[in-house]
Length: 459
Image 1: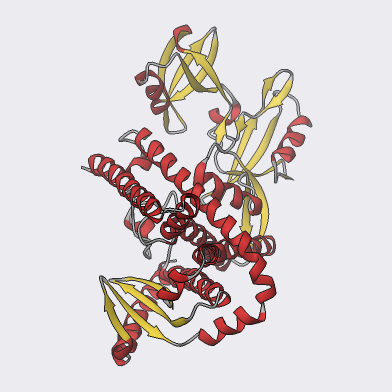
Image 2: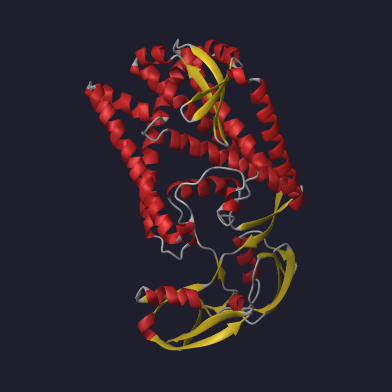
């Protein structure tokens, strides 16, 4: 992996060098507009013309779906932004989520830069440039194709540079665009985000096919020991112990024994809670069972059902050999099974996903491809992980771009989309302009609030 990072950084340096040389030699096509530099070209115009004419019979009725998708994305983005604001302020200063900046650039290696490796897979420069190519080209060319469909001239295509950030654009005739009827304008504005959603769906299919071929299930992953909720007022005694090199509290309630980590119990008592979630006195926690269970007495375990079927074949008090994989190492445990309602009991569990909002959407999408409680091994070594993470980033960035661009504010596609909508409903263009200003300020205020919270957490 270290060798690949070095290779990736060399590729980044070569890309920057080639880009600088290319832009310098073609500086006559490079113009500054505001804070950005635009490199204009005629490449791709023939493809836009051909596609708009060739598939007119399909694209024209498709505009209704494109516009509908635009409204869905707009409403979804507003909802997610508000929900994110409330979620962000609910995080305590000690929460790792509170230390994530509310706004951070999508640049190579940003998970390492902001210490977000536990939330995101690696984001190499190779991923960045390939994902941006897929996202930007599909987005901008879709704008151009639907513009051409509605008889709006395309002057040029090209790349936009804002410091180290790069994007693509398709430059249509603004006068013709503003004179067009409202529905064609809505279709053209939403076309880019519609293309990003299609790309996300397409790459989810690619990911599913690739994953099924490149990975094999090799074990069952659990994320918790068996647990129960206890009434803190009924606690009879609490003792400190160290078990498997981890400090625990041993808690006695109604002559039953439970275990709790220091942080778990502190969280409950510091919030003056009446109940606390603690771990049952079970074999798994006593033996320090860790990792993904691959087999029990040489019987393969791949799913929770496999585990239950094997445990049902034993009696409480039987000793079994449990093999797990943890940090790419095989660990063997000789565990004496416990007793729960007369059945053999190991004492592990899984937490159902409670993710909501955008994270919930992503979790559910990934779960369609990769079962979160199954441990997989690669049939292609590190190459499989590299390709899988690349596909993951292409999907996520397509969804993020689609959502963000349809937020009804500023110069985003969603800004004029909202203005035209309000104008069409009220018959008053000023009402559309006012709605756009309100939503733009709303976006700026929400971002400012989250950034202020982040600054207080960090400093």
